[in-house]
Image: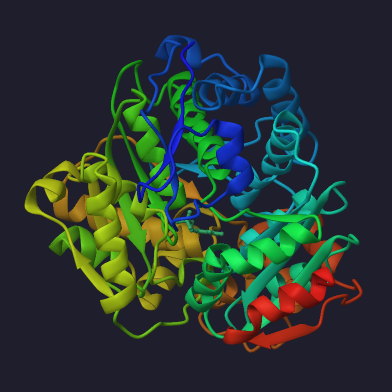
Length: 496
Ligand SMILES: *Cc1c(COP(=O)(O)O)cnc(C)c1O
């Protein structure tokens, strides 16, 4: 098999192996790593129907991570997708109201981030060995609520690594916050910043771009990496579950081999839906990628108009993991849309930083016609969660509610009845307050755990271990800082 190499979307770096790209996370020129081409699937669609999750993941990942040996990759896959997941299927499909919900929340932190973050630590420590890295790897991560916990669960007490997570104070759900501040492991640190997710993400990117700071770190035996979805080591594992879902759709006789499907994805940083796009480029018969936003509908506007404009009010919603105005991974689609012209891409990204917006050409817009952008307001989200529960007894979380609501709008507008997979990105238990409020009208429960118990009675779904664990857990992290203090806090945590 030919070796695939990786390069920065902004032209500053070329010729990296997959393991080097995973180790670095983000390119020094601020760009994201992209493979020089998107490989084609080498198994037939018939074969997919009979494959386990682990086998599917191997078939996808070996094509992207070509410098990992078969033994290394299988070790990573089998260590990640094991009994940490509460079902053998890892990502089961649930039918409700004629749609297939791909449940991506059966891992240790009950959100879809586990799908990639349970394998990233293995990919990264393996990459460290392959590249003779002696430094301690410091994972810096900005989180809109779910990445932080999932990354810490993966990296806690992994030798040779430290992890520091920044989350927006007041911008995550109570369960999300408790999951993070109770995190164990001597190598973990959690910091609440006085700002929103975009502030946290911008701050982290700034630290990566500060070459002086990088030297200070290097002198003390540290090097930075990222567990955010900008790391190619997160994107690649996510491609696998779309391929797996297609096989399951055949097996469940929802489609015939070769039939097209649509996918609907609740979107924030554009990582999950980009993975679906990669799956399509690999040859999976996906017709339309339905990109679902909440009230922060910058992507909806982008797909309709060709203008990406972040100059707008940041709205806190009941789907906090999608409260994002700068969707980092969109840069990869823009780069592909510009025929991999890194200079063109760089110009746009610099313009976004300087003026808050950029425009794409009509030709680029046509190349993105596979995407259909939609959004659901808070009220539409609540109505959809209630509608689905009342009609089918199936309870979905507030992020999946956005995707499900947008899918309903899509069908109304297009009459397209292609069999559809909706990415179900979190357990409803993670957002029990908002979900119960949607189903029951108003709840006056002040206590999140009262809502959790109420949900358990109503749905009959077992309360996940991840929730039971935090009920009485000790709070271990209390650090807070301002937006402009993030670098200083990192220095303090690492004892620079
Ligand atoms: C992170 C997250 C999303 C958004 O995914 P992106 O890859 O950032 O687009 C949606 N739902 C949940 C529950 C999440 O945690």
